[in-house]
Image (cartoon, rainbow, N blue to C red; front, side, top):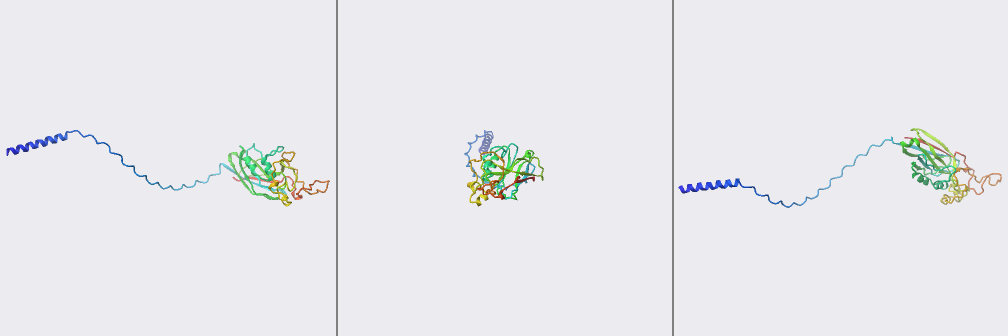
Length: 282
């Protein structure tokens, strides 16, 4: 009996000592870090957002709008398409008494306005330009052209126009740097323009030297009778045109007339030959 009590007491003491040792022991070191897991798969692309709304229409506070219309005042001289140019001072499509540019020669001999517009567009004074495109018969009005320039440039604005009288060798009409500064909205200005001789081609008035309908009716005309780079007008200067000679009175030595001319009295003209109206609409 005493042996059993002694064994029980000894066992209780060993348990107590073991428990005390476990509570007072040091924490073990952390184990090594495990290897990284595989990267996750990419997520799906998001849907495109909805289109934004259109912006509001801008106001006209920083631009000025003009219309230009050409009237042919002649009886039977058709005008070619016209070059209409707005610019600042310092640029000129032509100068009286000076040699014509190649661009002006192209228009005055062949009725092509595009080279004048191209020439003007590279100038620092250039603002806007348009070609009227279609021909303007005698005693009729051409289409209305619209040009837009910055509001800041309206206080020193110029208008230049050139169009060929196609039943001639090298006649043209139009404006050279006409002053249209400070026009108010709703205001219009009218200009009367004479005909000019570009001084680049002799005024022979024959079917093989003119591009217009009169030459065509006589079996000539066409592109081959238009621009010719060779200048056979000995004067070679821009000047007021002396008018068509025609074949009228060619048999009367006391009167002016060209027996070889394909032009008739209907092709004569008096100055001015064109009326130009420019209006500010905005």
